[in-house]
Amino acid sequence: MFGQRPRARQTIGSILALAGLLLMIASFVWMQRIPGRQRPVKPQIAQPQPTPKPFVVVVLDPGHGGQDSGAICGGVLEKDLTLDVARRIERLLEADGIATVMTRVGDSYVSLADRAALANRVRDSILISIHFNEDNRPVSTGVETYYAAHQITGGSFAASWLPFLWRALSESPNFESQSLAAFIQGALVARTRALDRGTKAKQFFVISNVTCPAVLVEGGFLTNKEDISKLASEDYREEIAAAVSDGILRYRDAVKQRQSTIAVTNAEQH
Ligand SMILES: [Zn+2]
Image (cartoon, rainbow, N blue to C red; front, top):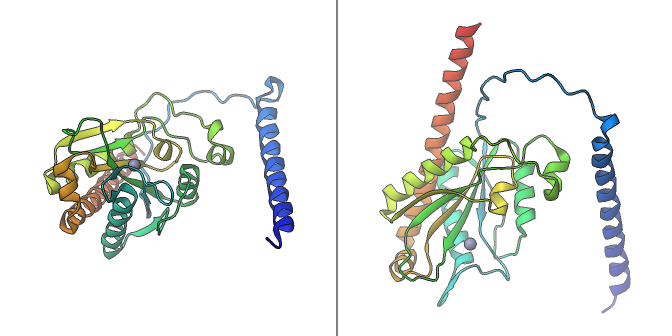
C-alpha cells in the first residue's frame, strides 16, 4: 500500500502528458485541413510501377496471450499453440539467416494496437500473425491465410500512431500482402495436407494497421476433433512452422525476381 500516492500522481502525470501530445497532434492535423492552408496539389502524373521492397526482418505475432486465451478446447489454449508455432518459425528463419522480432515472448497480454505499433517501428519488415480457428460447426476444418485489402499508408507519423487517422490505400488490391498470403497458404497446404480454405481478404486490426506486408495465418480449428489431435503433435506443429517459413522464403525470392525485372525494364527505358 505504501507509495500508492506518488505512483497515482505519476500515472495522472503520464496520462496528462499523453493527452497533451495527442491534442497537439490532433490540432496539427486539423490545421493541415483548413482549406486556405492546404499546399497546392501537385499535378497528377503517371506514377512508375512501385518497386516491391525487400524485407530484412520478420515480425512474428503469436495471437492472444495472458488473460486473453483465444479459442479453447479442453486443456488446449490457442494462446499456447500460437506461441509454440511462432517460436518454431523464429528458430527456422534464424537458421536461414533471417532476423525476427516477436510481439510477445512469453504468456503475456499485448494489445492489438501495441502489436501493430511494434511492427510499424521495425523498418523493412513483414508481419506474420499466428492464430488458430474456432467455429460453431464442429465439421469446419483446414487452414486459411488472411491479408487486409487495405492497409494504412507508410511515411506518416500521425497515421502510424493514431489508428483513427488511418487512410486507406486506393482501391487497388494489396498486392504484396496478397502474394505473401498466397505463398504461405500454398506451402501450408503442401506440407500439412490440411483442407485448403484459401486466402481471404479481411480487415483484421493487426494486419490492416501496419504499413508492411502482413498476413494472418489460421492453422487449424480447435473446434474440430481431427484438427485438434493433429495440433497436439509436435511434428505437426513443426510442419506448420516449416510451411510458414517456406512461404516467407518463396515470397522473398519472388520480390527479388520482380525487383530485378523492374531494374532491367528501367535500364532498357533509359
Ligand atoms: Zn485467434
